[in-house]
Image (cartoon, rainbow, N blue to C red):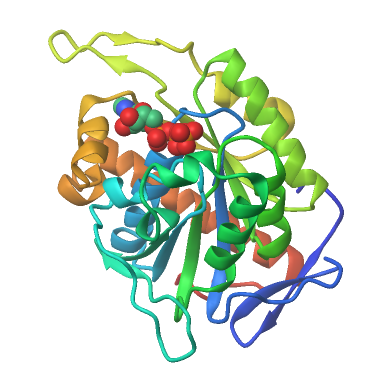
Length: 294
Ligand SMILES: Nc1ncnc2c1ncn2[C@@H]1O[C@H](COP(=O)(O)OP(=O)(O)OP(=O)(O)O)[C@@H](O)[C@H]1O
């Protein structure tokens, strides 16, 4: 594992890192919080977060939440087909809205879809803090956080406010995307968040007529980068029209066609992440068996 040695302790089933300064546990009942991030925009981070959340629910049988922290361009309302505002509980916390078995929260549930785009920094920060602290998630095995693209203030705030178990970096195989992915990795390393691995999105396009693969964004770039940097390679997701359709229609392909090749690829990636979290737990606190995912 990269970065300084840290070790886990367990507090009532919730993981916590020793040696992380004075961070408090902010999300009661949530065992692991993982960030899905990319340095570059438009590489399929939200698509990955949504499909992974459904795969972690359906294929890994976990209790999963999905937080759309991409305040500038929330896509969860469309991708998860949720068109209502969350209710508030007696503690004045927002109750996540469930679809496909995943508990969801997004700034897009709260404001007009174009409003956040023109927000100034302080408004973005205040909205983010509300999203991070003001949601009653209940008991979750994993909360998947769809990060805003890039490595600016909003991203750093999230990594500082949330006790992240790790970050998944999504990239296309293209050099320019991989360059930004490296910046993302650097940001997480600086704040001592472990990298769960790299996932390559849009890895290849298979002609629906002849089956010939075309490597539109280059071949194997994320796998190579993961190997060079010593990180886990989580898997590759092809460029496929059904994935895009699923996003636009609000039915993730993992939910609509769970036996498809693509849904299986997301399932394997989800399993890889779960195993990586378990490995980290075992390495760091000396456990010998799976505690939560057996
Ligand atoms: N593997 C894929 N195959 C086909 N289309 C995809 C795939 N992954 C993502 N897309 C499409 O690419 C577009 C961008 O994806 P997405 O919104 O997930 O990217 P993003 O990295 O989250 O973007 P942003 O930087 O705006 O947050 C969407 O239209 C989505 O449907």
